Image 1 (cartoon, each protein chain N blue to C red):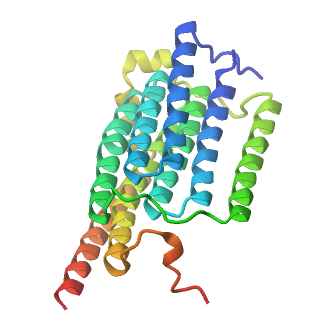
Image 2: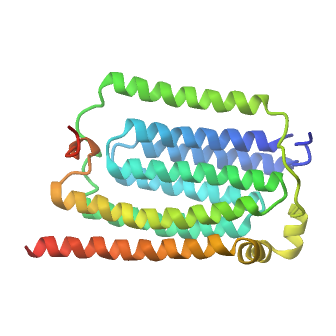
Image 3: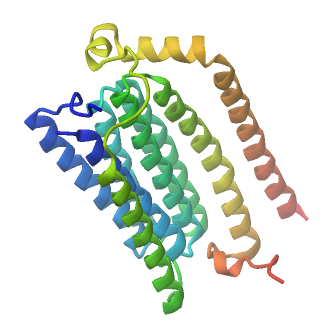
Length: 100
Length: 185
């Protein structure tokens, strides 16, 4: 059985769910969670292909993605809380100052 | 091209189906939940299922790191932010315009169909095979092999990642200070 196909399909499904969430939800926190789900789907691809190619290079990418995700969450959630303090909303449609 | 050398025992297949279904269910509950706190818990389920998947793919260290960093730190940070912005309220008022919802859903379906088509047509994974077989990992240990790769071959990205984390810490502190200053005014 070629397990790699099923792993790639699984991570494609997870990525699609995350992308659909970013497109269809308007709560900034939920959008952020969907970005995390997409990052995780890509991590799964990296690890599956790293096993397939019998090389650890892909897993280094996963390590880096985890570091970036940690920094991103720390900053991103700080920004979301700041926006909430100023405008009492976490709805991305209400944060439209830059819209012409 | 052989992709057949990556074989799975029946037990692994069953576990893959279980954890895959749990991961998909967790991800779906993130985008379908009415309250943000349930979204956060769905995300936790998704992360734990993926950690199990990583361990099954003989990436033990990354599975544990996934549990600590994602299921631990990131979910807790989300729950903290949720408490600060009031998580008990429904996530969003009003409905998305039907046209936008249909367009977003259609884009997602097209994207998935495209990848499924490519994977179905795939005949193999190109590229040279390395020497890190699951047997080698079981013999030497995943942490030792990953640590050697990280600190010998990828030392510059590793150092850059630590700089990135430092910038993240400074940025988070700067955001918190700006908030306190704006409250004092």
